[in-house]
Length: 189
Ligand code: GLN
Image (cartoon, rainbow, N blue to C red; front, side, top):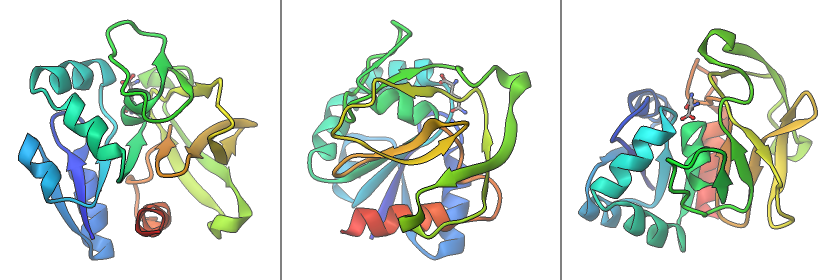
């Protein structure tokens, strides 16, 4: 399994560091042909408006969407905004890979960043998961095609559909790699 990490903006490097610890090969994805080399894709946190602009500019949005038809994509924070169906910012060209809407910065601005324990569904076998929210989006209008895997203050923060995952927090920060390991398992199913 080679994991692609979209590396046009944002905190792609921390993802590589986490997968290095797990011992999984990664590739920074920056061009069309990179999609042929990878088995799954992480869209990292960063700035969704900038990433959306760059995806269009480099004409990567279509190849990314086509890739998602038969491969797992994991959108994290800004990445989850991109893969959602709609968001509350006209500058974002949503990829519409997962059927939910995202509300940018709804957990607060940069200054309101926080870390806390989230509630993860028992079947994932990940208890006491402490994680970080940075200008995190909220997920609303979650379609029945999606399942809520984790919540915080009774709001969804990690959801999946048949093939894809979206998290509003940052599983690549800190040294707890359990959720990224779950993603690898999920992508391999
Ligand atoms: N609020 C940012 C955005 O809308 C996402 C922040 C993040 O990825 N940590 O793009």
